[in-house]
Length: 303
Image (cartoon, rainbow, N blue to C red; front, side, top):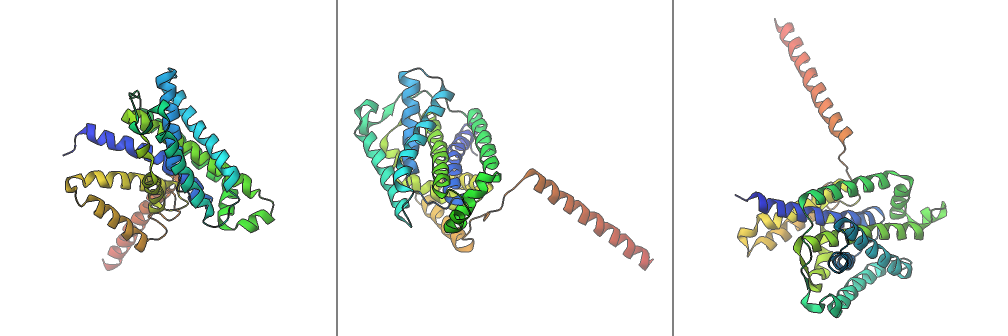
């Protein structure tokens, strides 16, 4: 059996991945922009927050927020030049951005270069990861249900029609990218303060791909799907760790099966809500009571 220490570690990783996946879900799932450069935003958040706590003694929460804001500022720069690109060109541009950020840190000796940056304070724990995730999910749900969230969905569904009815398409794309980068930067900052060591190799293209798979696996256009995707695809490789040689094969097979059987992802745009759960149980209770009455009437008729 797994020890609590081990499970706690996986739950922290779920929370860190969920931060990045939530941001990516807003960009890809709700606004329709595919990005393969989110590892670059994670790297900016991780390195900036680590420098803040190590070199300047800035408190953990403030350093995490600064890391997220630094990633957001970088997204405004890259978004200004690339968001007008059509088709797959934006995706390719983000891919190049992610690799460029990694190579910059790889050659920046101030943060250790290719050797990496050790000695980062281990401030990330399960409690602060849960608190930050609850705030992040609530803020995302509020945004999606607002007029601005509906405008982002309209941009995803039909960009030209959205522009025709007065929606500022570029502005909403930029907003989605900035918020997405903020979440990724915070996720990177939490990761740095959980591991205590970071190096550029940790922010390769495979990291961006992993996050994108979680979004698609859970379901595009669904916050609940992002939670499910991050939870399942973080836990699954760990549960299969004893089958070290086969676990990535099983992981890949699980993703392929889901994509074949449910191309829209596990939840496919559906959302869980407290009201929906209560309504479900009330329907179940009503159906049970109705069946009981019908059975009693049937029994009386036979008597």
